[in-house]
Image (cartoon, rainbow, N blue to C red):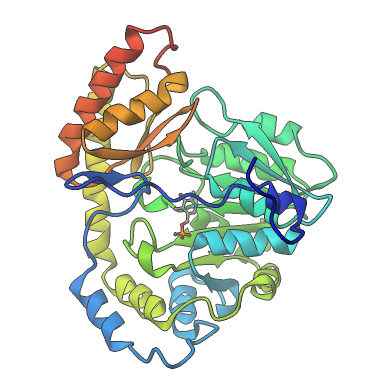
Length: 371
Ligand SMILES: *Cc1c(COP(=O)(O)O)cnc(C)c1O
């Protein structure tokens, strides 16, 4: 036991582990533990951020220019867009807006590691529904777990860290089975990598909302992954203005810098170029997935910028093998390893480590290498 804090903390907060970042890369190695984009920022982005150097001034708290731009892009009113310092901030704001002590927040698990902590900080209770065997959301089990205390349902597609999307039909079935006053957060952090997957599509939600449907859904987007702005912290939500008012009310004011806002605007100007990078990463991911499958891994088809190796009890040992190959991966002890698809130069090491881990699993009794 560590010493207790010298002041009385909320017990649910005292019990929480602090957020742990993906480990840094070893010298000359690859950091494949945080699903970051390996491409350097566009020169135009660097230029715009440098030009926005009035650090002595507060930023535009309502991110007006960016929200107007996003409103146009998505065909919604400006009040139907809310910008925050990354989609983790959006999740925190919206969970806090809708759920408190005695309320339940439902999500598939394993999923994004930030979810349980954000729910606990809001004072609400997590209801974690196990993924189906292939790492997907089990919509029937999720619906069966709904109670009258359910206030928020988190849907992560593609799911971090296991990789599958939530099929559009499954998402529609989930919505149809939920009370219409339950907030549904559609976390699309990796949507740009999932073209052609048939996953639930936030753009379709936005279109239905124009007809007054699915107004309980808020779509979450981030510039961190496909757009390569993780270090600047910026993301946005699309949804009913009155629901987004809840996020605006719980937000820590002035968290989104002007530098982040201009970087997002310039990135939107260069969308085609950035999506080309995404296409390269997606193709690389598909190649890695195929190679892993040929090695004998049963890996769920990945739709984000990462692959999931269900290494089970051997996860720590597997992470060590990857580390020896110069790769820092994200280990979920007892469950599996998530490895980001990044630099082409990292792929050979990734596959070599995976082969070694595969051999290790086969020759031990630590369990089958299945998803
Ligand atoms: C990376 C990630 C986010 C958020 O990232 P931000 O940098 O806060 O925008 C949200 N959800 C999932 C599932 C993620 O993997």
